[in-house]
View 1 (cartoon, protein in one colour):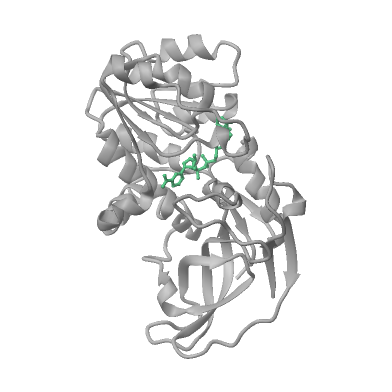
View 2 (cartoon, helix red, strand yellow):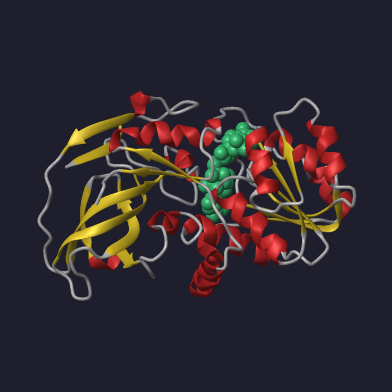
Length: 331
Ligand code: NDP
């Protein structure tokens, strides 16, 4: 068995030196426990915050303890009612090749007929984030303009496609031609704007001639400064993330107050966990949209347990395309 522990807290971009690989034993499952082999491990931007020793909604990772997050795995041995060998499960587990955990800490996937990695993206936490934040806070109406940043990513791509289903005009912001083209050609967005292009401001202004009614915020920083200039009266801004600042030591400070006042806009931060009550409904609806081909998604699969640190960094360099996961077993 192998695990990855946090060797020290990163400054800026997490280098290889903050991750330590360790050989460990496999524990035999006790009463009501399962031995689970990890198949796919999810790397997510919020984990960067947990690497810092600062108080936040999620407890910091401990030094010398295994990192953890969403994992999809197969049951190798079951000592619990309701689970048998080969069941496919997801849960919040340690970054280990094999986890021995209480059966209560995982759930079986709803169906094994879909690509299983979807349970770590569209049919999992990131899909629920998009669904909950957009529909509860953004409340897009037919004909309105919805803008989403990190638009080709795990959350952003689903946000844009749900907004299309709701009849909105959708503008996605992403880095580079390939991602922007994907938004319009593959996902059916009305426009894609490349924030890395020299004429980003002009491109963006041209893409939102009627202003912005909903801005689903994933990145913060200078990209958002530009979007805020175009807010319509009573715009809604679900604040999902601000990835541009996660590796930064500077205080980027809020600088949207003037725009919020001018547009009487509503800006609300959220955590996916707050929509737990509607999780079942969201899962069903997302699964139906995926089955009907209304929601497509891209996935970047890194191969091998040793690729986890690199895959994690991809989230901050943009080297991922869609949901970034790591395949750690062929089973
Ligand atoms: P993505 O799949 O979108 O991957 C991250 C993407 O962010 C990269 O591909 C990159 O795309 C973009 N990015 C990275 N650095 C910058 C930068 N400096 N400026 C602009 N864009 C940048 O990740 P997720 O879908 O998992 O997460 C998206 C956002 O949602 C994050 O902010 C995350 O923290 C947040 N989140 C919040 C949750 C909540 O409960 N509130 C739950 C889950 C996610 P590009 O190549 O286009 O630059």
